[in-house]
Image 1 (spheres, rainbow, N blue to C red):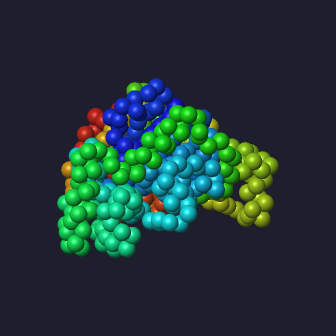
Image 2 (spheres, rainbow, N blue to C red; image 1 turned 60 degrees about the vertical axis):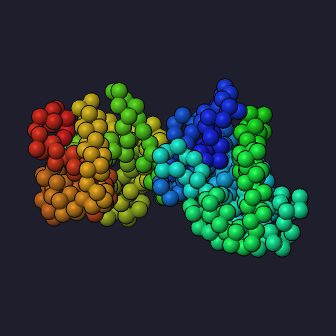
Image 3 (spheres, helix red, strand yellow; image 1 turned 45 degrees about the vertical axis):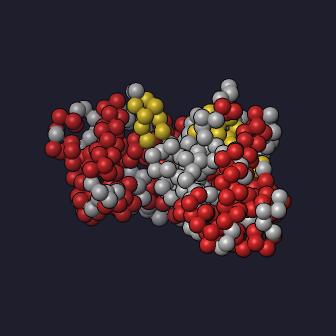
Length: 419
């Protein structure tokens, strides 16, 4: 399968994209390459991406996708820039814009950035610098401008902030610099061909064709050390999803729910630590947990959960099975209900986020649910795999709106571990 992330550069309605084996997707953003439908052996073509209206795609997300066997091609827009950055680890760049980035002839996102329509249709409303530069080169080649005038005009056009570089703005800049002839020539060419000087579009089509022709980069072995950072694991876990009981649930939400509400979770966490001690993630020799604990502490009277805080990979099915061993269907229904409560709070309270949930309120909720005296709060949090009380409060904030709804409506607490 070929997954094409595009928007303003190449409309998804373009007939040349309506071919078997091509899956059209919106402009790429943070988390999109974690999608479970993008599988080993697939090809991803990155053309457009977002970065103002949503978090941008990170380089390590692309590297990780390649590390698990996904072929990645970039062109035209943010795809060309990322391909220039990641060519050494196997991302394939296609087209004139990619080549210009590699040669250092252009740099920066502003070269390819455009303002987009706010209606979700991803229509480009402004001119990118790369297209204007190409139009000026064409004008020089036919004698409409000389090189010096073209360079001066490009400098003036580049100085316009990209969301404001509309056709009207381009025309106004040209008139202000005494280059009305160029503006008229460009308008005439665009009337004849709406894609005139659209270098981004040409490169995007070339990239899609390269994927269709099998010119995808070979699958490379990308060492996990290049992308398995603490930040990457956090992103990976945040985008992990499960489809179960007719629900699509965040795996991280399911885990936090168990850590908070399952009275037996300290035993689950102890079993998980034993498993990790016997089967280290780095492939090193396995040891009994007590043996490892004695070696690390020198015989000090400490519990394993106070010493070991292994990173959790929620895309590892074995990890998920161990950590959710005590989960019930009622728990999963509660996770969905709590996620809905959080989404509702975000919709109805301007500026609301989980960070806005009060620390003292969340702490009181945890103390109540755990039936825990204040002095033992950190110990209880550690025993549940939450490391300490501060980390437990941060993790549990996502559950507080749903918990408060359940307290108001006790019938929601049917048979699960809930409030």
